[in-house]
Length: 335
Image: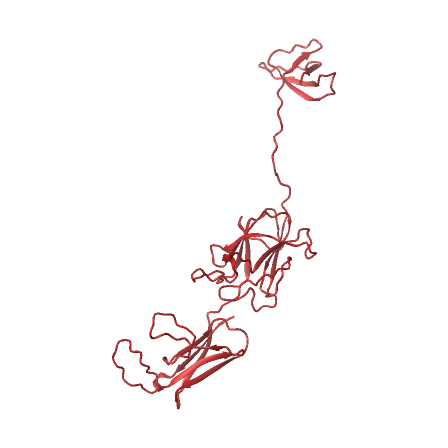
């Protein structure tokens, strides 16, 4: 939507000369002889006046609240004109017999509505529409087209059309399917812990209030005036500080950016196993000689013998002289 400007410029040399100045500093006496007036009217009857300054307070900002009876160059500006018919009026204050003038109509400083460009997780890179993620994002950056601004902190109070500074959530909603099926009544709104502006004025940061489980997700960016979330609560349209809503002027103004989380198997805890240290006695059979220093590997439990648990010695090797022996039958009791 362009910014529109109408300018009325009477031909200065053709305007009759006024009387001499009094010579006083900052003399506010009117010198305009032929006072032409410019104003616009839209189809609802709203009047748009030219810019004027206050001679009694020249340092105050110019306003568009009244007719201009001082200057011979007048400009009417409409920052964000709505679609429709406009009527340009050129009149006069006082008797004006004949005054040629020039009328200029222009658009400048084109203002465009917000459009989503990228979705960036905190790990970096970006998410494609429909992509399956193996890492649950804790934070997402929604990057919009250049030139967008959603909070203007230079004003007092800050311009915050979506109410984010006061805890509002207009414009953006994240939902999950819960069961992998959209629109069956089980869809849920995902709580957003914080929403605000990132390092760039066109970056909107979402921080989730809780960890996201495996599921199908949608980031809904709203441009319509009558959108209802899965909880049947209204969500207002995303609006920039110039008053333009998301995808303004397009046929489809709501966007639902879908992605999936499939985190796979995860280690949730490591539980150490107990180590049992106990005394035991080793008995060699078949006349086997077991010198001091041997190392023994004990196999699985066999069936209990009486009240004594018994393991079978399946290997013995490595002593200081690197000699291995295998006793014919060795038993370890008392473990």
